[in-house]
Image (cartoon, rainbow, N blue to C red):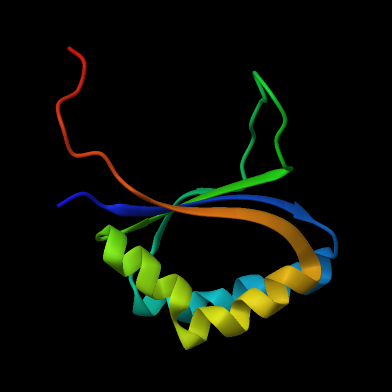
Amino acid sequence: MPKGYWIVHVDVRDPEAYQRYIKANAAAFAKFRGRFLVRGGTHVVKAGMARERNVVIEFADYATALACHESEEYREAAKLRDAASVADLVIVEGYDGPQPS
């Protein structure tokens, strides 16, 4: 079964308040076993436009990724995120098929 992912692009407007969001989201990510693959980090934009911060979180499957986002724990954390930043968040099912050789 393919994994599920959150792909998030963020512009932080209030760094102090954003730190409160990071602390608050830990409960949801622990409960749903979210694993950070990308959390900020150096990046380069090769085409188009991008926000200042990129995050990729892996979940066991797509249903778990959705459930985490809809959970009470994350809904509360999201209020802090929205007050401190502008974010684009996409939940996507991973690919589990053949790869180029």
